[in-house]
Length: 347
Image (cartoon, rainbow, N blue to C red):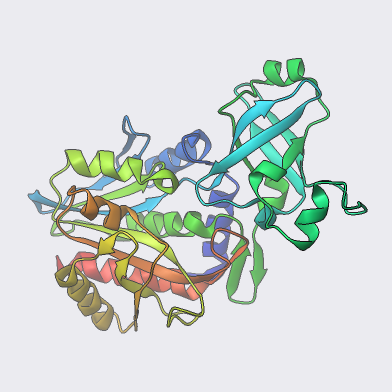
C-alpha cells in the first residue's frame, strides 16, 4: 500500500472541516464529496436520507458490505429570535456552550450566513446577576447562553434565520491546527473519518464483493442516515469509522494505534467481524487497541440495536477532547485506512 503523506492528509481533513455540516444541514459537504468522487471516477449519489453513497462494484455483486463515516457535526439549533436580534439556541447533538466559549458562531440562514457572538454575560457582576452563579456554582448550559447578532429580527428574517436554523462554531475558528504529527480542531468527529472513506475510494479496485462507502447523514441525532440506508440494502456487515474518546476510565492510549470496539452504549459489536478486522490488522502489521466504552454509539451499534444489520463493527482513532477541540494522531487515521484496505482484500 502506498504510504500516505501526513501533510496531504492534514490538508484533506482541513478541507472537510471547513465545510459546515450540522445535522440536517449538510449541503456544503455533500457537494464537495460528490465532486470528489466524480473526479476520481467512483460512482456516487445522494439518497433521500441525505447520505452520500459511493459504490465500488465487486466480483460477486450478490454480496455487499458497507463502511460508514458520518459527515454531520454537532452544533445548535435556533429556538427563539428577539426583536433586538438576540438569538437563543438549543443543542444539536452532544454540544455544550462552554466547549465553544464566547466568540464567533455562524447561523446558517436560508439566504445567507449570519455571524454572531456566542455570549454568556459580563464577569464583573454581583450576586444580583444571573451570571454570578455560573462563575461559582452551576455549569453553563444553552439556556444561559445567547447569540448577539446586532441585527434586527426583520433583517435576520430576510437572511433566512428562523427557529430551526442551525448554528455552528464560526468558520474562521474552525481551521485545524498542526501539532507535529497530531491534528487538532473542531469536528474531527467525524471529518477525519470521512477522509478515510475518500482514501479507501482511491485504493480499493475490483474487490471480491460490492463495497458501499457511505458518508452518512444525521448520525449525531440518532444515526438516521445509516438506519435509512441499512434498512434498504442487504448487507453482510457494516463497519463504522469513528473517533474514540480518551478518558481515565478507558484503557486507551493516545498515539498511532487504532481502537476496535467490543461494546458501546448501544450494545455489543459482532465478535466474528471483529476477529476478521483483527486478522486484517495482523496482515497489515498494525496493532490494535481493544476497548469497551459507554456514553457512545455509532452507525454500526445503532444499526445492530434496531435490527438493520446483523454484523457491525467500529474502528476508531483515539481522540482527546471529543465533541470539543479535538486532538488525534495523524498516524492513527492512516492506520485505520490501512487496516480497512487490508480487510477489503480478504473478503
